[in-house]
Length: 115
Length: 109
Image (cartoon, rainbow over the protein chains, first blue to last red):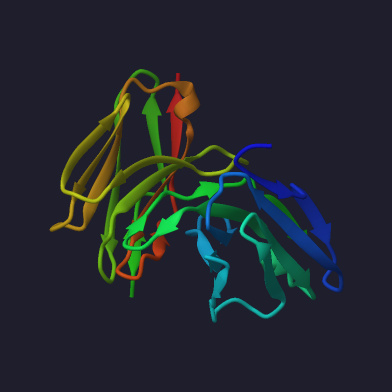
């Protein structure tokens, strides 16, 4: 595997289900991100793990819970979601060094539908 | 608040040139990115500008004017495979990426 991979690619779930999205990066980067992409809206940054520390995003509902066990893996745990949470969930990674910034590399996304 | 504006949709003809504009108002500036995203696929990096001027990379060029809060992406010799969404994103003073909603480019034969 190369780049950033995400599983599953498609997920349909009911509002009472619990599921997890998985992301893995094979680029040796030290930062990973979860984004939500809705039609005709800007990418919404949900969570950032940089140097394995989580940067909080207070606007994300608690029904989304991230987990980053190591610098290569990132999970997004989902529970009691709402239909408006239906969207494309993108994972990205980048190499962060003090005072500089490198481009983010994205995975193909998980298309989530909440019924 | 922070804001990135770009047109929602543009149409161009195969072989022609198209310019996609992006204007921004952000708290600080540490660079501007352009990404390409084909339908159902991941965004992929196209260019990064941090200084004023034009950066050329093959058929694609990106221009930045920091004093005007303005950038454009220029695509030359358009091909059908250039049909995609083009995302503008600005790195603010906290090194957070602020994204535009994207411009959907439709290429017609």
